[in-house]
Length: 449
Image (cartoon, rainbow, N blue to C red):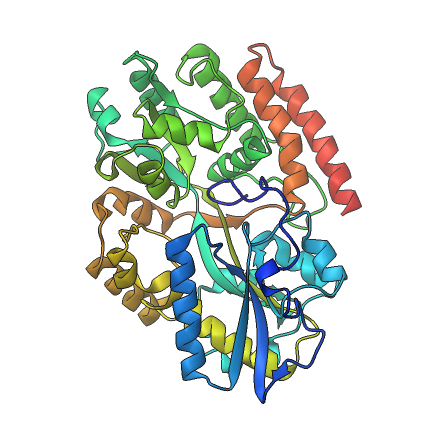
């Protein structure tokens, strides 16, 4: 799942942008054009995202000016990767030379032998050693590097400071345990007038996604370390469901409307009727710009439980047919676009500020050491959101285990959706039976993968 929840929900787009139909989609040629090395890249923002597209085009033009021997041919798409066409594009030789992937797709692309080994070329990527090791590891298989992280996120607890104050809670001390979440939710719901203390998803695979995050927060796992067996039918798994059950049925702090998805929670939070829900930092500008929220009222805390949190993100891999020249050119492009602290498509905070884009959110945090310090310095200098509202998230994350989504995530989430929805819609739901049944189904999924 993506942090905004839109990862798997949009209809398929054309395999290649019609506007670029005259260009090759992938690496069917040697990548040379008029003496230049030509690379096709995807994940260009669509025309409907005017500001992002303008920035993307500006950055490519700047890159080509600095590298006149490289021709970058971008393909736009939304979403950047459609699961309905992704494997078909790979198998059909239609994938771009440099193509976008989610973290959870990296191992699969390598398994089906569709990714170029970048290891011999890493010296051409000057920023590689500055990227967080745990993110680099996601694209490393059997000691070989097959992709480059572009951004990452981790889940936390978004809460409404105004409702906390109204309910007699201290907004400077957000809940740190699930017992505290439950207590705070009960007080917020007691405000009445349709106010909900805590909301959670339970449909469209999003319930399974959040169950996973909540399980991580209590020190549990969805699958075993070797990826062969389900590990949801455990004390941690029971604790997650029991908390949700009790908040829904004993405390009446989750409201009567269930089978929610991300848009429902965002609407409730933006309208000032929701106290808390789990999300990543990039939900905050959506709450303000699309749902009527206020930056001053919205704060972010680390995942309750103190054990771990779910991380996700994306990066770029290279077509296995890409030539050495194309790989070197693509790595230079990634350095320019995404991996220069305080600059580029994602990091030019001064430029973003001029377009009233939010600057100062606590993530993504891609770099380490001096590179991270520089990135944070430029971000802080251009911040236009209340960064103090996110400090507890930054502080708390330092002690949490960062854990990626499980293998076969979407299939597993579909199974767990049914578990979470049953607990939230049936007061007499049998947690033991639900988790036992889910474990069996997940074992079958893992056996087939």
